[in-house]
Amino acid sequence: MSTSLRYELRCRECRTAWGNQPISFCQNCFAPLEVAYDWDRIRTEISKDGIARRPANLWRYRELLPLPDNYDASTPAGFTPLVKAVKLGETLRSRSLYIKNDAVCFPTLSFKDRVVAVALTQARNFGFEVVSCSSTGNLANAVAAQAARAGFKACIFIPADLEPAKVLGTQVYGAQIVRIDGNYDHVNRLCSQIADKHRWGFVNVNLRPYYAEGSKTVGYEIAEQLGWRLPDNVVVPMAGGSLITKIHKAFKELIALGLVAENQVKFFGAQATGCSPISTAVKAGRNEIEPQKPATIARSLAIGNPADGFYAAKTILGSGGWAEDSSDPEIVDGMTLLAESEGIFTETAGGVTVAAARKLFAQGRIRPDETTVLCITGNGLKTTDALAGRFEAVEPIAPKLAAFEQYLDREFVNARTAGKGAA
Amino acid sequence: MSVTVSIPSAFRRHTEGADKYNCAATDLSGLLDALGIRFPELKPHLRDDQGQVRRFLNIYVNDEDIRFLGKDYKFKEGDEITLVPSIAGG
Image (tube, one colour):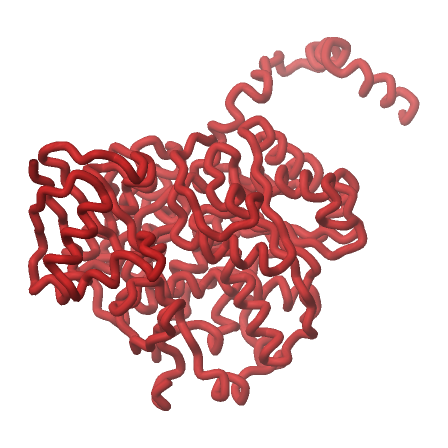
């Protein structure tokens, strides 16, 4: 690495270095690029105490992110709660279960706020005026919101059948939205072609190597919030497959820097049964991905041709982990189980993760005494249509005490019986 | 019979700048052979040492990923083939 660079792009396969520019794949061998860092320099600059003194957002890990000089750190994304999940642990038979709750990530309630925060620093650095993305919804929200705040024009490409809340949650920020008559993989291919022709900053195409590094902050935070300790297992939802590889990368970096003790963390991937190209590969013991045509209510995970599927499967199998998938009814059960046991309302992708974790515990692949973190990456208020018909409509009653007493007799016989004793 | 191949900008330094290529290939194997003969510098980027289509090369026939059509899919007159190196997204 050139001595003047803190980081630069490098091919994941042939290792050719490409400096810093808005490209996502090696111009020699066409394999994906990722960011490599000057670790000698980082080692002299970073410390746990230094990190602890900084504000509680993802910029506290700035040495470990590909940020240009004078980047704008005014959006406090990240540093979401790591919640001990005792009740869910009882159901799943875990004595040490945690939820990494990105359902409350700032500003748009998903982990995509992290990757966009990093990507937009580079969009500014490379001089883009228009930022864009192909999205299954959460990324659309994150790009639209952060572009509005940072003063970029935003043009967002989505599959036509996206949940209404995710469409509204993009338009409200003033972003231009382009609905594509096709699934996410069609949208994604089109965006690759547009990025090839127009000088736009596509966060998940030509800015993708920088963008994806933002996902590492999930891993840094898990370690720091566990008291600078690595868990034994993480369960991660998979769409493009990037997040699970980046949490793995984050843990490896923390070990290499001596910030945490080494631990052989097992990585478990979760997909919807209706779109499970990565978990299918893992179950077959291979890294090569066969694309699928998505058919699942978990639209945020509905990527049939995952960009990092190969690397996700490799990470999982190499760690001794596994992958599971969840059917549509299991996804809804997972959402309600998390809500009823931990008070966390997650979107369908979170239902996938909870339901897959339930299977992994039942199979004995995750043991009760191990520390396990479930990554919840999005908010249930964005996918309420998945719960349509799940709950009965509540009939109104008159604002009279007698009407309430009648209501109790009718609806709450058990509660009334219990209440008499207490009075 | 003729099909048209759209060549992405990253490949064009191996195709003398050509962004389209018309050929009479009837299937994927024939298409890769024809591209390799017409553009020898592009050839090593299309198949690996075992002769398999490179892992990160995505090939679409009209709007469909060719893996859904099957590797023996027979092209039809006017099919538009798109090459996308290293799909991104997610």
